Amino acid sequence: MRVSRAQAEANRETVIDVASRLFREHGFDGIGLKDLMKGAGLTQGGFYKQFESKDDLVALASGRAMESAVRRWSRVAAGSPDPLEAVVDLYLSPGHREEKGGGCPLAALGSDAARLSEEVRAPFQNGIEAHLQILDELIPTSDGAKPHDKAMVILSLMVGAVTISRILTDQRMSERVLETATDAVKRIAGGADEE
Image 1 (cartoon, one colour):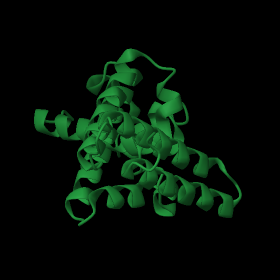
Image 2: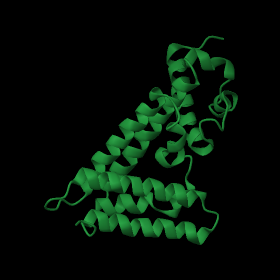
Image 3: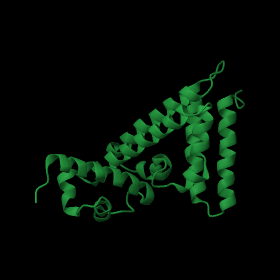
C-alpha cells in the first residue's frame, strides 16, 4: 500500500525525532537502522526511500537534537529572573546527567561526532555557535572582558562536567563534579577569574 506524500513526510520527521533520541542514548554506532526504524514504528525497508544514507540521518537527527537543546536553554532563560543561573543549574544537574536521550547532544555525542564527516559535524558546529550566542547574552559584561571567550570556557566546562559525571560510577563523586563545575561557571561568569 502506497503512503501519501504527507504521510511519507510525517514518517520521515518521526524517524528523525526518534533517531535524535536513540543516538543520544546509544551513540551513533550503538543502534542499527533496523532498531531505529522499529523505534519509529516503521520497517527498515522504508529507510532508503526517506534518507540517502545513515550519515544523512545522523546529520539530520544531530541538527534536530542541537535545535532542541538551544530551544530548551532559551526557554529556561526566558522564564527566570536570573537566566544564566537557570541555564547553569538545569545543565549541571543530576537530572540532566541522567537524561541521556533528551539531554545535550554535545555531552552525549560530541566525541562520536568529532570522528565523523563534516556533514555530521556541521549541525554540531551550528549548535555550538547558538549555545555560545545564548551564553554571550547571559554573561554579565565587565570592563576588558571578552564575553565570547568566557562563553567558550563556560560551555566547554559544562559539557565536560556532564560528560565526566556520566562516566563516574561513584555517585557522590559524580554529583561533586557537577557542583564544582557550577561554582566555577558562576565565578567565571561573574569575573572572579579575570586577571
